[in-house]
Image (cartoon, rainbow, N blue to C red; front, side, top):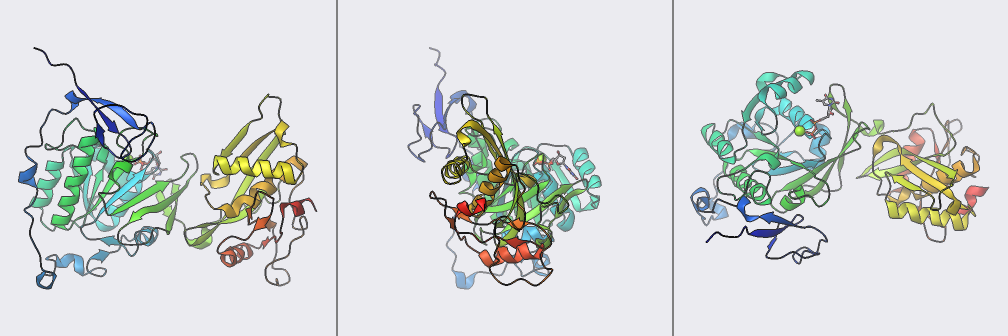
Length: 457
Ligand code: TYD
Ligand code: MG
């Protein structure tokens, strides 16, 4: 008798398997994440796995031998060594931890391979190329002006190949980049490359390998569209650190954020700019997305948001135009949709703007995403400016700085910082002093108002 094709249901968020479909995953609570996968994708049993795993062993910490890898200890503080990219180190904590596994996640095309190539150009190591050929990587290395001899490229999709290579080259490499986890497979995992189980098994094996060899691994994971099987979310709990590389592809600003960090903080960010010759680190003083020549324009408001512990000056632009559609358009890019809608509603009520018959477009320059509610006031101010068709000048609204200003210190327009409540009150947000300092450093003053009503003055 022929067997019927069997299927299994897998949650794309947590990877749990179920016998039947349901709208919500009972393991992680995610909605619409369960996908049906044919069991024929799972031909290989888990038989080899026990040979590969090391035997468990009880270790007394008092008797633990120092790590046998002196070449690593010369640089940095033993277990931790610098990536020689300041922004990268600060996000990781102090630097790269020996034997750790970092999941390096981001949308395709955002610059993951570029940044990791630059990292390897500094340190040297093994580049496991699953997606590109050695020639293609060489082109990138040349474009970035890096030394080709720092790169050993292993063209493979097989985790066994990586294991053998690292075994053979004992202690040769400090770091290995695996680009990307989505194209890796193992003999022990079930399913084809790209299948959830293969990705999980590959990651599991790479974590074992990193621990065994002391090589720090950077595993690239493409963030796939929502609901797609096998996004990096599946792997977060397995690795030591999860870094997200974000930004808008048509913008050139990139932000590196730690989502999980076993060895360091998660509130630091690294800022980069994608340029002709790769990613350039942006220092604090430079994080200024404002073109000072174009100040005080209609529909524009400047704010200072906190990215980790660093202030960053950004411009919010609003376009408020009369709508001829039955439902006016709302387009928010760079700010949360719900937050945007709420601010439109508050502005309509408190500032008497008839926004129900106006289309509202909001965007944030530089293509960054703002989660900081400190930008609320700037969003409202930009909408008001666009609606009224007047620029926001230093005199309007009345601007009182938090501390006295020196004569001639202020050269440019106002800065709007504050969270807007449902009643239109403007509330102070965290790290006001840092933000004010940043504003002042850029020759601007921070407006101090208690209600968005005062924007009308
Ligand atoms: P890439 O690192 O290949 O992205 P990912 O690995 O995340 O998919 O980067 C792709 C983009 O970066 C590509 O559109 C070209 C651009 N880029 C530059 O602008 N400058 C450079 O020096 C390099 C190498 C790439
Ligand atoms: Mg890539």
